[in-house]
Length: 224
Image (tube, rainbow, N blue to C red; front, side, top):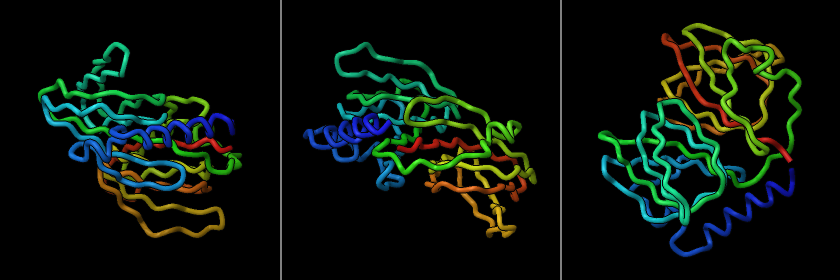
């Protein structure tokens, strides 16, 4: 596992070091940094109809589609991929160099969680997928991440469970209160649709205190 994360970090550094590769540097019109720390860099990628990016590079990561998207992704030296994507779909991607063109009739919006390094491994005794399958669904998994869809109806509450460090990408607005193992409860926290939050490893019991259902994608980072 450690060698895999070293490879991811090396790929990120290589992509950043090569002139004209970092999308934030060469294509700030379409790529913006939502959050960054030692483990991830999260980019919001937006393209209007017919718009195209220059050639750029990404390390391994997870793409979360914020709306219905019809993009043409053309990797360097490989055949293009023009698979339409629906809002809420995810794609686990390897390090790549490519251009992207919006072939649809409406703007496209994608949140890309770029992987930089692994946090320390967290102890997960109460796996959300096992103890609360009504709210948590597995979307994909590899050696680096596990990706989960979370859906809560208005007023619904989970059971106590554990998560490693993760990035939460909200597909709809959400307002949650976290109940903790010691019996305390935090203040309600609200997030707008299309936002991303980094969450450290934690044990908690979420409650949707909003008046509507909410949906988000959780990208859990597998530790070293």
